[in-house]
Image (tube, rainbow, N blue to C red; front, top):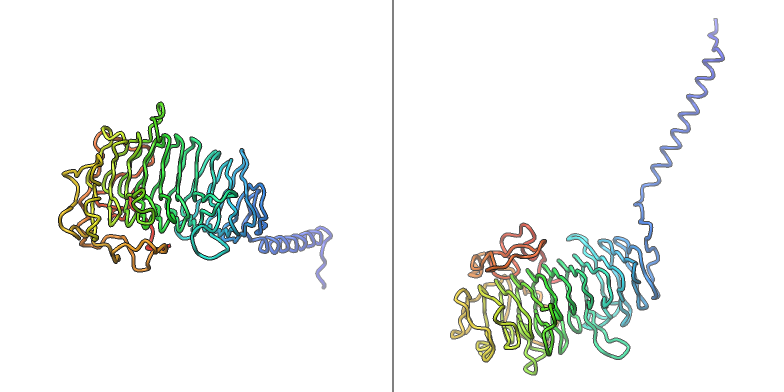
Amino acid sequence: MKNRISPVSGLFVAITAIAVVLGGCSKSSNSVNTGPVLPAQAIRGTTLSGGNIKGVMLADSIYTVNGNLTVLPGDTLTVQPGATIKVNGNQAFYVQGTINSVGTPTKPIVFTTTGPAQPGQWGGFQCDSAKAVSFAWTKILWAGAGDSAGNTRQTIAVSVPIPVNITDCWFVGGQDNAIGVYSTAPVMILRNSFYGNGTDDGDCIDFHSGVTGVVAYNCLWGTAGSAIKVYTSKTTPLANAVTNVAVYNNTCVESGFRRGSKEPGRGVLVDNFSVAQVYNNLLVNNLWSLDVTPFADFQHTIYGYNYFYVTVDSLRQWMYPQGEMGVIQKSDIIDSVHLGANNPMFVGYTPPPNPSVRIIPTNFDFHLAANSPALGKGTTSIPGISLPAGAPALSVDMGAYVSDTSNGKGNRHAPGY
């Protein structure tokens, strides 16, 4: 006898079949939709003709900029890791709002030129009225092209009292200052690498008008002017706004030659009405090494445990420049009598300085060899000074590349860029 299916059983089978079909469709649909979720303000167009800009430049995308871009007050431009931005001609970013360019060690952000890899190709970041400026793990290459009046521009320029945080970045071949801050801004300039900045003038780091904060673990090579300049005002001190910066564990090599004797560049310069704490810096073959001028607040500037090395006879008298206020400290490692004394033993370095070279030679590696005499010769504290929150501690090693890289200490970059 044939089995008979009741109406209720038939209805159950039909519903089950429909559910299976619908479930299969749903699963198939979900498997197709696997791409990343884009931010609400994603900048999808990759050719930017100029004008106002806000939103998010997307990770791993390549953008071409053909006109000046302005971040308006109240707006934010965010750049995701791995993005590459190529700027055509002397166009620049004008930041009146906020810029956040935060890459990662494995996916740095790159700002460069569409033109040849040589200094002064595009206009950099003019942040004279910005609300916030943050760069991390970002390569900024060949900036500093002239403005409409033909004046060279700084790679990053800030003239308002906002926090300026620039960490783990590369500055290569800028036409003028790499970083210029001219205000009562608190700064953290940490673990950056500067190569070949300034054509016939320009400093790597130039502070004016009451900047406070920390410059530490930076590697600075081949600057036209000074590697690190601490300065308040040309004529008179500003009321309650003295530039006061802790400068420690930096490696400054071959600074000052392209600007020449008209205004000698220094490894570290403490000048007009400013105060600094200068410790554990490795100063190698700079035109002038460490200069505390008679115009600085030299009574409150403290320094020591700095390491000096020169291989050119004419540089020996300028390690602490004659006629200035800086003098050799007992804790310094310095020999102004014997040329070539105290070789820090870089992994790779070939003196003497060649000011005409703007691209760092491939064999230069300012990490310290395992048997370097600069290891273990520093101090881990600055007398009477507490570092601001977020600042890494001093290392017992000299210079930017140290053996203990915990808690923010030590430059993290491989040689070159």
